Image (cartoon, rainbow, N blue to C red):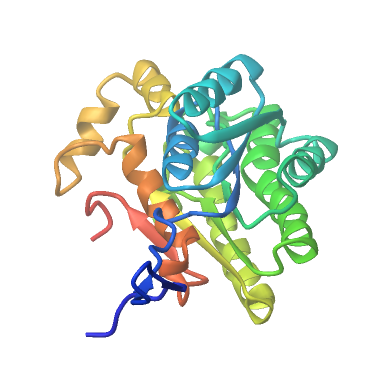
Amino acid sequence: MRPAAGRRLVGMNNETIMSVPPSGLLAGKVAFVTGAGRGIGAAAARLFAREGARVLLAARTEDELKKVAEGIRADGGTADHAVCDLADPASVRAAVDRCVERYGRLDVAFNNGATGQPPGPLDQLSEADFDHVSAVNFKGPWLAMAAEVAAIRATAGRGAIVNTSSVGSLMANPELPVYGAAKRAVNSLTASAAVTYGPEGIRVNAVAPGTTLTEMLLEWDAKSPGTVDRLNAQTPLRRAADPEEVAQAAAWLLSDRASYVTGTVLRVDGGMWA
């Protein structure tokens, strides 16, 4: 068996030894995470830091961001934050710029920030809600990817991006029709970006979570009691995911271990769509 790749060193007795490569899926990388104040985004920020990345957290609520970033630093990781509203183009670009200013580069990005919609048929959704869901869940990732590609090109040269979609984008979604449609649009953006930027060494993928115990899901369950139990009954694993289980999938897709994976929507759904 060939030894693991590493730098050759000479020991005290002139024997040749191999240095230990950096540990962690994301060792040495700079990661940008949106929606990082809670839920999957917060779990991802913590995980990415444990896996060796320097992380820039972005979301609308500064108190939440500070709490997550302080926790990462207390655990020995490197993290900073930038307040960012995905519905505001200038805010998105400024957050990505802040990442480069803080760490000098951008290697990987996890576009996880999203907003829910009031559950119900599409004809009962207000135009204002439609516009907000579309701005955050569809236009937001587009803005973020455009800024991230520019930052990766200008600094690291190569990199990876993961967008958060939803298993609800892969099927009819009568209870969350506009949310599902926006996430399906993200799937299309992901595929198009993968084809566009692959020749430059920038990979673009998405994760499609199933039932995941985030604040957004719990708010839906509060408005429509029994939702979580019903969704779990439709899931072969018969349970909801912890946010970190989705974050683990994103970490792998962003890592060099997924170096030949691009343009895919990876279901993390407990078998719901099997």
